[in-house]
Image 1 (cartoon, rainbow, N blue to C red):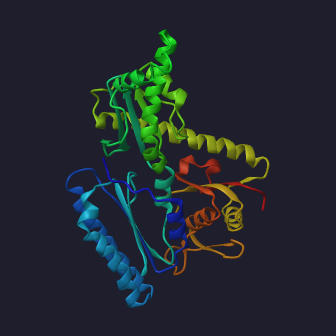
Image 2: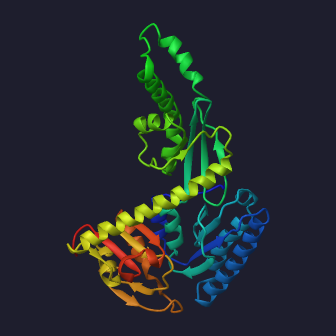
Image 3: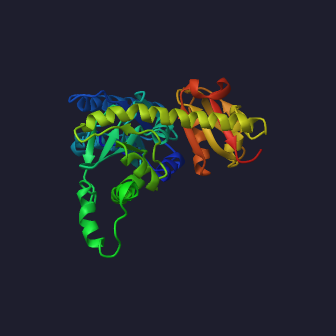
Length: 371
């Protein structure tokens, strides 16, 4: 499985507030033993491009050197590259550097500007393409971490019951205090006890990640776990059957379509809410209206075109948009800046591809109130 770093909202907010010179680099990494080395070469080439662009923009030489030195330190960091991922994002300025290994595919690119280009990182945050798979059977309980297109591996979990034999030991201790119910009722209670022990063991790990949890089990353990589940990101779809002998990688492959369906439902639910609120004046698709609403903290959730090439500037006081050109000094990705302002006001951002947006616009927003 890949070593994936999922940025927190707080980290993204900090990145969005940083002001230049800023270099943003994204590198896609094809699976394979030699691909990490190829990614390092690609990152070095992009860093050289950024060095030249900052110099051409008139950025002082000491700031250019400090910024690019951060990137070269990551390129030379053997420990960082020892753990592979599907893509890498690096954000560097003269005073700071952040790097993330992600499970998502990205478009390899470099941007030098007065702020970071965050669209692809926001996509990884909204759709991390990772999950946990909890395998439960009478003879086996294990937690498998999954990253799409990158395999999977079993995670060591303290206190996870190895099998249902743990119930026999607790039953002996409890028998004097309370006789065990007989028949189907007794079986159901015992199955739920087993499921609860498993849940108590894995919750600290899965809660810390916030990733979806998928159950791989056969009847009757499926309803037993569903009855006691307390994790808000538990997925309805299951990987049905007994998986005592199923490899981690196979479980990972079977989790991918479940994740795809989960994300598709999330987008469809958002679009349905958007259509309902559009009639009430609380949903907009105009770029200028959205920028104004974001500036005043009125955007509850935002959907933007991940591939947009819309550049210009936004006024700090009222969000007025001045459309421009990427090549013009001082211009930046408008939708990234709108997204940054939404995040600063604790809104939700969903970067998607153009076909997922309503009304053919590069942006759509659900408002907390009309502006």
